[in-house]
Image (spheres, rainbow, N blue to C red):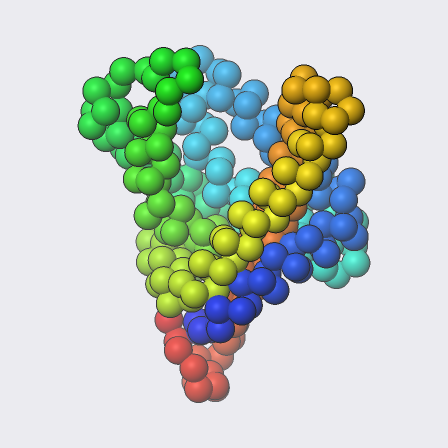
Length: 252
């Protein structure tokens, strides 16, 4: 396996591919994303262990959505069973995925606790910015970089959990320009579509209608965004089965 260094403009291509692929299988990909969100909410409601179990399943669920996108790119209808692709790849890779889940859960709990301590753990009053939430999101950034590619590296390339986390960070940083363009492009898409539909909703029925329109739209946009993640991985790594015949590049 080797790392691909891609030009910044590829970030736009990732967004386009995500939108195009989603438009080919909107019901399937949106339905799978909603199933994922519902499962997370239901698991999180389990007393005591819900948050822990939910966190452990995040890498596997992320991989499931990427596998669904891969199916869609091949012209196939992604079935619900694709969401558990991580648990159908052999004992060794299942174990590695669960290790990723443990690391993610511990890391997420740690940075959330640090954010709470730094802000005093005082909940924000109505109408005020929740500094604890903003700080927690900022502190989660290194964790997001570690897990952006890690589940896919474990599943499709058989990389060990610790190495997959390291390679994921390296890939994100080496392709920083492409990911910056990717993030800015998605921000523009979210703001543009959100503003347009919000305005239409407000004109048709006031603030309440605008809110009613925005909620399902936000979920659909999130599902479309999740579809594009697969392409960031696909273009960042290339499989090289035989190390001795590996072409020139940047092996990792």
